[in-house]
View 1 (cartoon, rainbow, N blue to C red):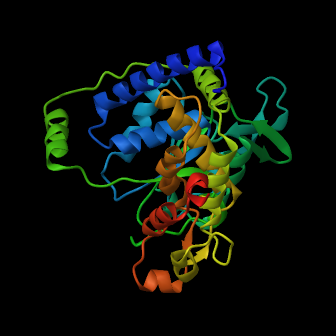
View 2: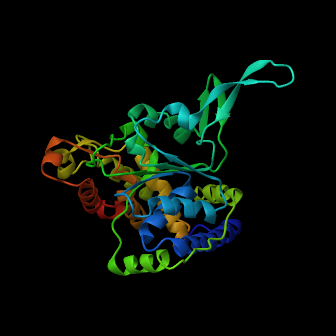
Length: 338
């Protein structure tokens, strides 16, 4: 017998699906194509995770982030990462100020651009590792500590970082600890011929997208809480765990490709990302419980940046995505295992 659905959850889920579609439509006024990328970014927003966008310059990654901030009515801050960017440039610093009346001097904290709610970390892998690591506390704890003083960031807080492919000159690979803070890594590919025609029609004729604000920060936080009320049955959760553990070479669920080509597998955050994003996928499909197929859909963007290839994998040109796809195909669901 199916578990009865809480009417309040059912009503809230229906309202959320309508809002999600409306936000996606508003973004579509400005962004041509890239539907999977848009949905992936929105997925991270509504489960409370950060997103890493990878692609060559000029594919609209920055424009997507700016458009999202307009559609959800959240303050937006853009940080252009460069090799000479220092941690204080993004976090903020204490400066000496003087009272004009008394002439008394004192330290005053001047907030950096991280004190916003949607952060675009543009070309994050052009900055040195020291500056990249300065974002770790903000991304994980949603707070910043400067000079022994703790500053809580406003919620919701979302970091959307763009990076150029690491083969490009002048890039620094992101530390594994920072990569693990991103819920999704999304790869932005070139536009198709028809999409490029639409882009030219819009950008060379005076067209200006009128993006309307659809949601508020409070509604986004409510949606994040709602996602956590969606059910993931024990056998589906077990499947998500086994998929995540199948990325661990030497582990009990590792497949042959993992043993041969993988150096490091996904951390527990990978399994958390699988579970949360699968729940959101179920919500958007009008269901109140996550399924095996939801986990499978979310596996590649959730795990691709958490799996490191070994020397053999890199030498043979193996892609991380292909290893994860093979894991999905070869890891049995509970029903199949039985």
